[in-house]
Amino acid sequence: MDQTDEQVRLLGEDGTLLQHDTYNVDLSDDDLRDLYRQLVVVRRIDVEGNNLQRQGQLGIWAPCLGQEAAQVGSARALGPDDFVFPSYREHGVIYVRAGMEVLSVLGLFRGATLSGWDPQRHKVALYSIPIGTQALHAVGYAVGAKWDGAEVCAVAYFGDGATSEGDVSEAFNFAAVHSAPVVFFCQNNQWAISVPVSRQTAAKTLAIKALAYGMYGVRVDGNDVLAVFMETKKAVDRARAGEGPTLIEALTYRRMGHSSSDDPTRYRRDEEVKQWAKLDPLDRFRRHLGKLGLLSEADARRIEDELEAEISDAIRVAEQAREPADASLFDDVFAELTPQLREQRDGLLGENASGAPRRESPRGGH
Image (tube, rainbow, N blue to C red; front, top):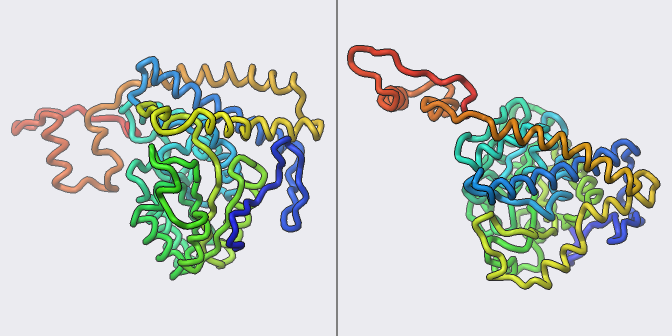
């Protein structure tokens, strides 16, 4: 890895495709249009999540505004059997992997569900709220897959703040020592709640930390969906080929608060936010498609109009989801309930010594 702060970039800020010695973007016209549509969907979902929280429908929301290219571009590069370990704002990753089932996160932030999607079906673990723990989970999965001889990799998503956690450091070291097929995808959005990245590390970049662990590291423009896609594809291909882990630092920006409970105006300047807004990932890719003749202004409006109805209908379905039954607290904790959990469940449901019937929950309550 080059030890400078140079980023891999394939799209200029005006949408021009830049010449690069290493990368040749071979996506079809249909793939490029579909990539744009996915970016638009993710932004629309994020806007709706924020609106629902403001309306009192959700207890909290973790926005991803500004990070759509990092999430969609990387998720598009994964194979169907690769396993994703997200943090808690990877709505774009979940959408690419699970489609509109991503809206089940509305139930999560409402406090009514654990996730709503089947991790095994979509190869996506549940959201991880504790910072950095999913990096260790990803390495464990990757090592197990390697032992089984499976040609798959695991991908751990986390933010810049997580690189200050011991769990992430341990994951880096264990993965490198065991040449685990894992990709560490760090979305450096500049802020760990109110703490800037400059207070997280004295290193010139986060990607450079890979050198200390003996693995490959690279820094990519996280607002350039094509660069993210190509660099992630390279990393997962390396992992499947037995060439070990990769640390990708996607340089992007969280344009909203850390969550809907956060007031970012207390710790960052409006000028900074406005400057990053000019680097909007959707605008850049829209301009690129326009230069290729693949997307006109009328096309863009039509896509947004089509999505308006589709997403609004899906939101209404998500809002009408019933509250889970009490016993669903115990579903999916273990493959088989332990005696202690069975006792707790029976106590919660009010089962008495006479063996009165208890109220059972449907499977999938989480």
